Every structure is written in structure tokens, then in C-alpha cells.
Length: 121
Image (cartoon, rainbow, N blue to C red; front, top):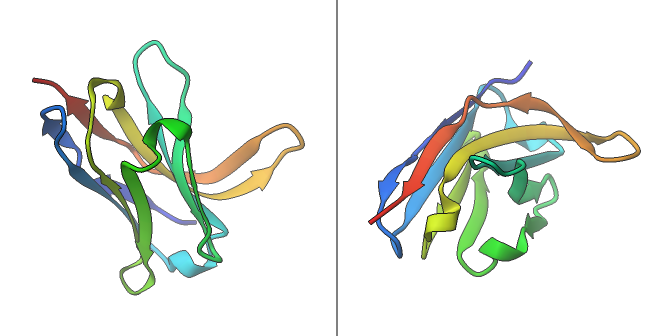
């Protein structure tokens, strides 16, 4: 069992930056994938960025060039650096790990509790 704890959310003005952290209770090096998802009111949950065990990364189109996912295996932590934030980035951000393909979509084995990111002037 792996526990994930997110932190770093908050209120930021448009154009500002935040860095989210996802701390795992165990070694993240054995997790096949860690993804940052977000859920905004009235919208479906979406994968924002992910990093595989081999180091490859994925980003949804709307955050490419603005967000960067990284990890520190020594600290068992995955980060999401978010720059040039805009109003549409407002959401609860969740960290999830160890995904399996169900034949139709990915299912994640572990989820954090989420951290609120609010972009507002």
C-alpha cells in the first residue's frame, strides 16, 4: 500500500506560479507511473502531466510549455511546477500512481487527497 500526500496548492494571481509536491510513503522508483490530475467544477477529471518509471513525461496540450513534472527519488516525491497560470487552471489537483490498462482506459492504484489551486485576480 502506498500513501500519497499532495501539498503546495493555494491562491495565485493570473500569470503566477505554484509548485505542487506529491510525497509517497514508499519508494517512487518502483511505481510504474505517477500522474498529476485535476478536477474543475463542471468538468471531467483530466490527466495534466505524468512521469513514467523510465523518466518519460506526458503533458496535456493546454499545459505544454507551462507545467513541468519531475521527481526526486531520494525524497520519494514527484513535483509539478506550474508557471503562467491562468483562470482555467483552477481545480483540485490530485496525484495518482501505479496505473494499469483496463483495455479501455488507465486505472490508478493509489490516489492522494488532492490540493486546491485557485487562480484569481
